[in-house]
Image (cartoon, rainbow, N blue to C red):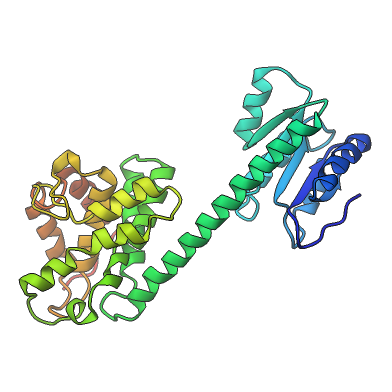
Amino acid sequence: MGAASESNDLILVVDDSEQNVQLLEAYLVAAGYDVVSALSGREALARLDNERLPDLVILDIMMPGINGYEVCRRLKDSERTRRIPVMMLTALQEMEDKVKGFEAGADEFLSKPVEKMELLIRVKALLRTKHLNEDLENARDVIYTLALAIEANDPYTRGHSERVAQYARRLAERMGLGESRAGIIRDAGILHDVGKIGISEAILQKPGPLTDEELAAVQDHPIIGEKICRPLRSANMLLTVIRHHQERYDGNGYPDRLRAEEIPIEARIVAVADAYDAMTSPRPYRPPLSKRQVIEILRRESGKQWDPEVVREFIHMLEEEKDLLEQA
């Protein structure tokens, strides 16, 4: 069976037929890939415990013991392995069998007997997509680090974005937006102020009122943040939230003066979470407000600065989570 080096993409081939494994291995090694193999689902899962994970798994469905569906499901349920693409091999022709595979997390299907050219084309496409996603994830990590580094240099905002992200995510889930959109909202909460890297520290930490020119500079930060975050995966909605988290429900916000339902619900949620944490935290120009005071401000400005439904659900969430116990 093939041995893996560190130079090429590593493919794990799983099939209970040694003859099938040898055929696939011959095709893949000739194309320049490193290959490791397993003759059962149990052996495949053991392979996935190795230090070097495969870049792709080619997985037979019909195997005794742990079948391909279960191997795929376990692989996709693990944080460590869920981003590895899975190509399932099957002699089954029924649509329900493929549906079952997709439900388990399969990324691609290939019918038996395997045709060499089709195999190599699909392998190449899956690996290209995987590497593109990894590049985007690396960009995400760099920008996340940048956002948190900006906060770390300012004692007044340290931890602000992480708290906003958690408030916004919980609120999104409460409002039924679903796990995927809640994840985007969490990311936007982390990154919503990254554009402040383009604003003078003297302005951001000024203890007194801002001049009109200084205020205009601060109001540029959503646009700057949008530009910084363009390389990120799921960028469309993420960029929209970053750009519009300072819009007001009455249309008097910035940068685009959107109003009411024109503002994406994701941005309306981040806006309330952002305002709550900012007002309950100290700033150079004022001490923190009590949580009770901030709740009253949210209620008073509901329908003006913030979406009334979002404010109502946010307050209910805080009350249920006993986040109002601290009095000032």
